Image 1: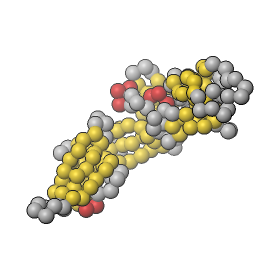
Image 2: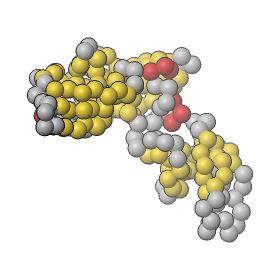
Image 3: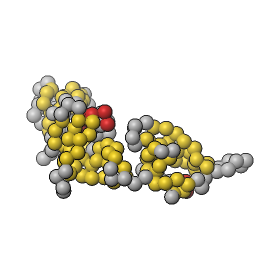
Image 4: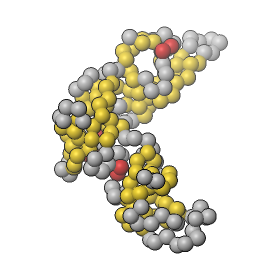
Length: 188
């Protein structure tokens, strides 16, 4: 059991039968009332974000979240198949559970899969930045390196990314998985 005094960003808790991750919290005390802890929580099963207020000192259970490193193998259309790199066990995750992450997945990408109590799959955790190949864009023009103008580029996963004018088809770029934005050229 943990108390509201133990709250920190990223902590996972069990509350009213659901699994939540604490995104933000604030301890508040007014002159006339008891102290409260206002939190912003993400439901790890549904992805919904909600705000809850707890009484200071209230106790709840900490959720046992385990992460396993896996590699994306292939998609069957309705499910995505991942393989544990140590045991070679394969896991299928339905499309609906990882809708926002699909646009970054390509064969061979290593991700972490989060489990609740080692059994229930909650979702996948992508690396912060990934390298993707540009498969379609208009050709770059010599001298277009000094402006901040951008153009559309489609990468190997089908994601549309705004890139600088000097990026050409066939180049690899680094893309942020947080918002799908261009970070830099891949120097590898």
